[in-house]
Length: 221
Image (cartoon, rainbow, N blue to C red; front, side):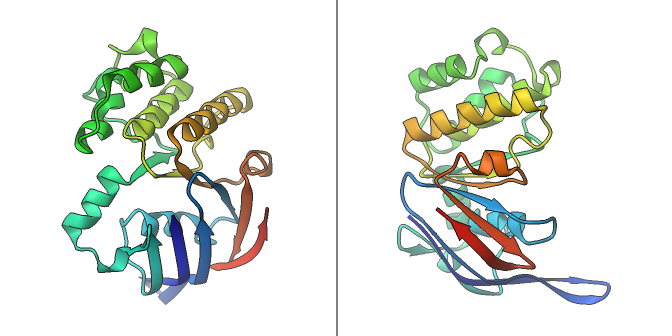
């Protein structure tokens, strides 16, 4: 459902133009999972931002269900972010003024897919039922990341993009959150593209791809 072809992206800094992606190509089938690895600065997060429509590529193509993203206007890209993808970041990015219950439902309401039974199921599976009326600042880091996962899965997106989703958690919390993410992605029938530095977490996905200096260095099944 996702095809990336010969993607290039550069940024301008005080020293001139910095090439971050240098011809990256990958494919991700529906329901498949892919771990994106590589050193800091290799272009992993930039690639996720391009797929999410948060930035535009210099050249190359991104196709989702045969629809090229580069041909979409801002309104259509915003719709893609609302309806097509679920985003999970290391920083959680929860809305501080909303309760846990409202944060969980936020993405699904934007997408026009709010299903109270599915939201209740997510809250139960994520262990969030006792905290639904609390606010993000009243939760631990692991609990906040569970809310972020629930929010991303609430609309049953076709694609989940996760950028170091357990990077700020201890090992036990990281394993628990990863278990829940993989379980819910599978139940929703979503594809998963996850950036991670952890070879252990990457091994739990069906495929692994390594970026080095903006190029695909290695892919493992």
